[in-house]
Length: 544
Image 1 (spheres, rainbow, N blue to C red):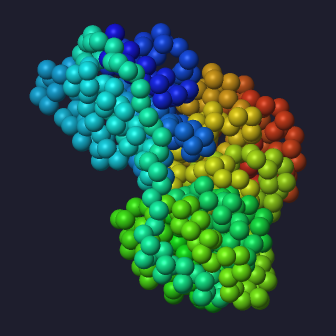
Image 2 (image 1 turned 30 degrees about the vertical axis):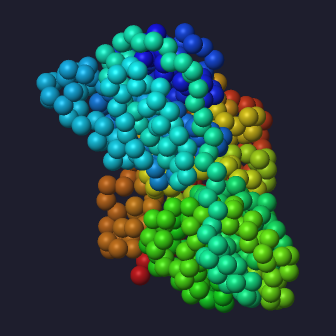
């Protein structure tokens, strides 16, 4: 067999059932091996950028390893955007790419698709990047790469295999085995755990700030909430506990929510679980959090990276919470009036935030009333998502809400397509702006070819709305270079056989979605913001 066959055998051995790929001159042996091996769904994407985001979206929803196969040089470079986003979101993605023949490596000879340092380029956005130098190395290096991608904190890992190595024959390895079982979770050390237990047990008005590193802790967190603890989550960690729970603020985490920020000052302990506390959500760490903070993270480099804390506990979040529950019992000393105060604040914060949204104040409730509880909620970067999409649209289950964590526009559509392959019968709903939607619009034909079920809601304001708000706030209202001619979305929908409806009334979103959602396949809802009204600016882009 050749090294391309080994790649196929490896993917089967680790139970990969879906890969996102573009066949090209420098990966044909790999793709040929996958076709002959059988048993793996190959989604043929229209671009490596889209394919990388699809692998990311698939992995986030499924909890499995996402796999991308790309071409070399320009193809690998196109994948960088998606690999970078997977790094931001700590998504396990295995990227396999080709490389020019070994004799041309590093020689700048003008070989087709040659790059001076492709491995270095990929390493700059991945946890690691490896090269297979001989066919006999293939199995071992792929094993290391997949294990590293899955290890917490997870992330993308790239493997490049020169085309001559892919073609070279070798003996079939024996035994063909690989173990991707996670390393046993790291328990906290006794001393910091004891101190944490003392701090939590003595807290009267405690809260958790929950990040995606605590994604599998919902059952434990719910026990704390039922004992009177409050909770708020990052935008990437939504639905770990149902956001309808009265003690869960969801992603109303402070930015632009004075009710929340003011309430933080009465909280006597905030425990941060597995979160980077990103700048988008904390306005570059200027939101005033409770003065007394503890941070729990499996990554020691997280200590002090953004906000400082009185105590840092290294360990798996689930192991820390289990140990805490065992030590503090079921009756911590939470003030009796704290749950009621928290619940009042939550309702007040939501109502006051809705007042800032102009004609879109009820969009979250409208859409939530028309979509199934377990539907997947995928957002691109656009004003609608930075306001009601991130904060007001309630999420009820973990691994059902994803967005570009790094803040990149245009990634929503391929993320949603990848998510749809992991949906297992659930509806997938995408919320995008018109400008971002067009950045990867070619992937609509991937969705068409693969028969994807996807509802696309496009907020059409004919341009970059958030840029205009920035220009209003900081550049004297000089709105330049932000207007775009939008396509005729109805004609675009027709091109891919998608059902289509346009919303021109601020109260019409729910009925439009209820009508179109049951049709299946590709469906498009265009919200005409030119008729309904411009989205108001959101904090921190209010005029001074």
